[in-house]
Image 1 (cartoon, rainbow, N blue to C red):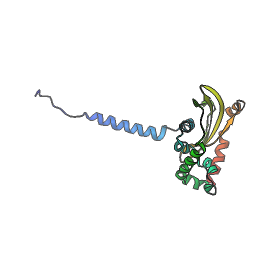
Image 2: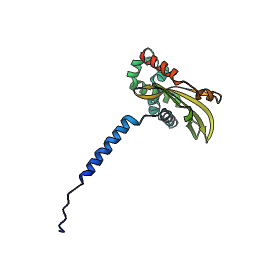
Image 3: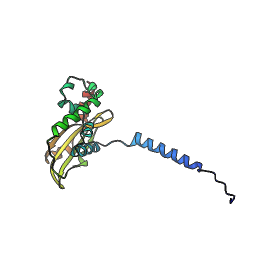
Image 4: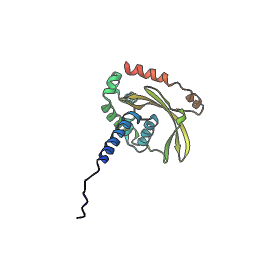
Length: 184
């Protein structure tokens, strides 16, 4: 024996580990806010990969109720309360609808971040559909906040001429409408 004393793990490592865990928690809880572009990207990535459970997770219950007549008489708050059942049924309906639909190869989306508008309860995201790197269409998605997460309320094709209007779009109009919808 050489006379050295092994004292184990230095105590400052425990302090560093605890500090890192605290910082990670604070970042996740207060600073890592989901962007509406992520919802749209997640939705289409799942759609292109035929992952209809993830597709349904990214859709608003208000979008889904159009295909689920058994929920059409529920109040908005009841729809949100029944979200997990609605997601499950939406996934099944989309899978049935898409069963024989073959998507073109090399299809992707490109979010046009300059047109994204974010409000208190909603967001607007504009994106290109690309095939083999070429734009084949433009679409806009309106998102609504449900259970502290933005979800797709509606999607619609738009023209290049509509892009100018999107630049100056006042998201507070949608915010107020969604606030009224959720409170009704």
